[in-house]
Image (cartoon, rainbow, N blue to C red; front, side, top):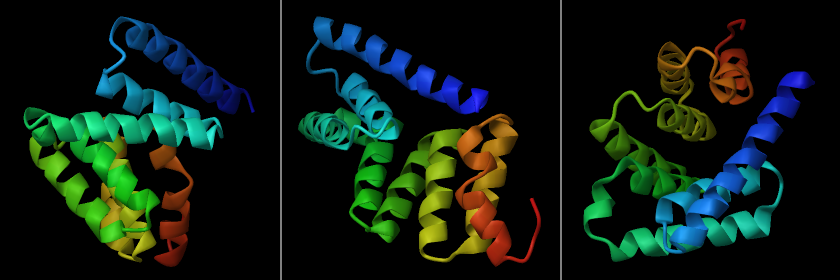
Length: 155
């Protein structure tokens, strides 16, 4: 319970920090994207989706940003949220070519792979994410547990 509280507290702090950045630059796509995902995590879906959509539009306007991990990960998440899991996996693969040690992207790719029942690949992504960031909560539980059950393994 304390751990969950700390995660919620962290997302609230992230939102405050992003708001400070957005006061200085209302078109900071990175701040909008990060704020959007924290809002969604806290259950504030419509405002979170609005931030993410605005960030995606800003990213799309910039040719250079289209090769950034943040842009590719955001498009991957948007694809995932639209139930376009294979598209999401492609975006995550492109992002991982740029930065193969991004634990969040690895985790998200694992989630998308689990949705299309590519369990062994999903588990590999979760394990790589945990090698990089051993305390990464999302990779430790949740969908990884489901994948392990599907593969007949224990946590």
